[in-house]
Image 1 (cartoon, rainbow, N blue to C red):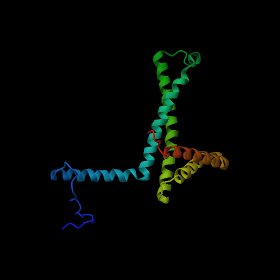
Image 2: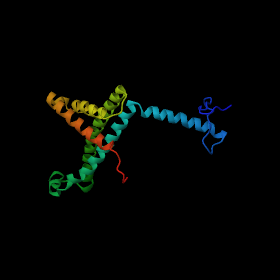
Image 3: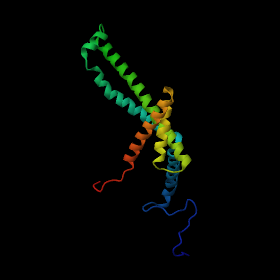
Image 4: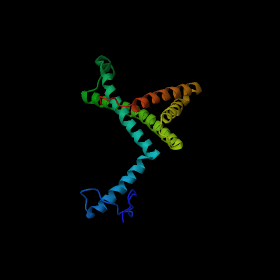
Length: 182
């Protein structure tokens, strides 16, 4: 018997199937839902967000370094004096090694900043149970202070304020209302 204005109730695993699916597809649908639940749970964890931000930062930092390293070799006369006596293969090998070292150094820096900020923001968001502008600003302040801690308290405060301001500007840009033209 169906009661009006009452939501139907079904036993777990026996919900109505989406249109176009048959009973034979139910096991496959339940399996997909199980993996979807695992992926959602993983993406909501602070550890996963921190690792993803760190790896992404490593990649972006390496890419920026690779792009900017092309400008480091614009003075051929300077290069000739430092690489005298080398054939072209040895020169190319040295240039690629130097580019690799620069990519690794820059990538580590970007990865460290990304992982630190994402991890702190996730912890703050989890503690506050809110997703608003306070989280990135607070995370930026803490991350900026941590990154500048070795330069003294004044630098830590300045670094925290600068990173918090930058985080606020980026978050305001990302949270803005889309224009009617879009």
